Amino acid sequence: MDLLSPTIPTPLQWLSNTDIERAAVQLFIKRDDLIHPTVSGNKWRKLKYNLLEAQAGGEKAVLTFGGAYSNHLYATAAAGRALGLDTIGIVRGLELEREQNATLQFCREQGMALHFVTREEYRQRNSEDYLKRISEQYGNPYMIPEGGTTGLALKGVAEMVGEVKGQLGIMPDFMATAAGTGGTAAGILSAGADVLAFSALKGGDFLSKDIHELLHEYKRPGHLTLLTDFHFGGYAKWNDELLKFMQDFRAEFDIQLEQVYTAKMFYGLFDLIKNGYFKAGTTIVAVHTGGLQGLIRV
Ligand SMILES: *Cc1c(COP(=O)(O)O)cnc(C)c1O
Image 1 (cartoon, helix red, strand yellow):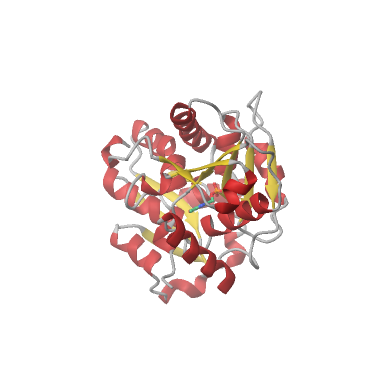
Image 2 (cartoon, rainbow, N blue to C red; image 1 turned 60 degrees about the vertical axis):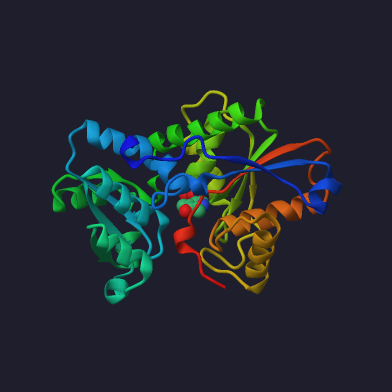
């Protein structure tokens, strides 16, 4: 992945405003959105060791899964192109075949072969029989699950925590991240940090189990706190209040968030800060997981 020339370590920036000062906490943002122009944020971290393994194994092609607006498909398509690996994307929703949204368009331009499947078929994406059948159908490619979330993904994310410790000189009291599959949260926990994970989807309680399963081989993971109330109606749903929050955040800190993950996390985090959730002196590092390719301009 050196081929992809990432910006590493990504910057760690201190954030301050009156709410943060009043709560007497120290808040930092880990700018993983700056890691790479097209393979951004946590997707770069999660793909790193998966793609290195694919390369080391002499694989010709990588197959993975995602929805029509998937940052993971986008990142995989770009990384595959740069590394000389063919990419195949299994996309949720047969009806999208004729859709020309910017994410899918970009994937096609990078040379990703897109295969649209029914939502029913997509639901089988983690079943062993299905994966075996798909693998045979597409010539035994290197398979990466949805979101890039694998044991190897945790290793890549853990390196980000190592950077934070180096930059801060201590392990923060909490690291905060948005959660979709929970792979990023699990990676941070695997490095021993305590995590506030903000579910970007409705009914995110299942994430706790998924995250703990991902961590089964780690002896001393950090402690997980899962926040499930800041989903704004569900995955890829948002309202004017969230968009206003994004605008205010940009005006205040000169940092762009996006509406699917990172704005929900920061909205939730500021809600906790304002409501006295943290003791004075608490140090929090919130990860900007990227995803700005999916930003809606308002
Ligand atoms: C994919 C994504 C997430 C969710 O990461 P998980 O590891 O699946 O929980 C969070 N933020 C952004 C910007 C993403 O693209």
